[in-house]
Image 1: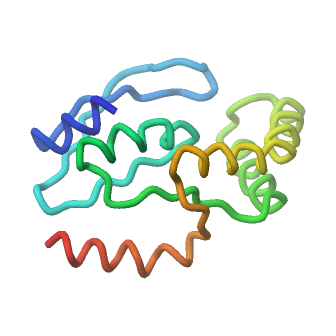
Image 2: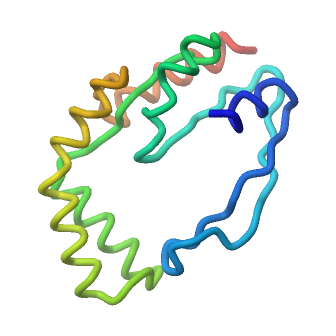
Image 3: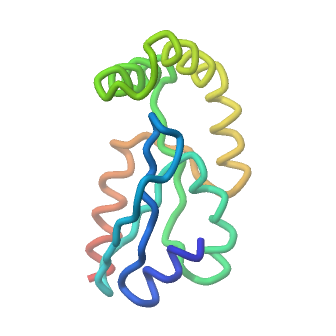
Length: 134
């Protein structure tokens, strides 16, 4: 959350670069944003900062974007296999566990303040927010 606040306040922030195959940070990169840019935070832990961002006035919206969990499993597996993130059977076992757990994950995101949505439904909303920010 501190990194997002720094990005909004100063226009740039250094963030870690994480290597999934190594399961650790392997460096840093600088993220920059202009005064009228929308900043999208994504990932499994993004919802953890919804409350703090809302309190600081830094939150335009919070969404848990997801697809049918079988589709997510297939896309994740194809991506992870193509990037050789872990051994194939590890990826299959992990993917099946994540697929089974997805309804609980979505419910948790919603309990933290995210609105459940499909990507195509958010495109118009984000485009409108972007226009308003300019």
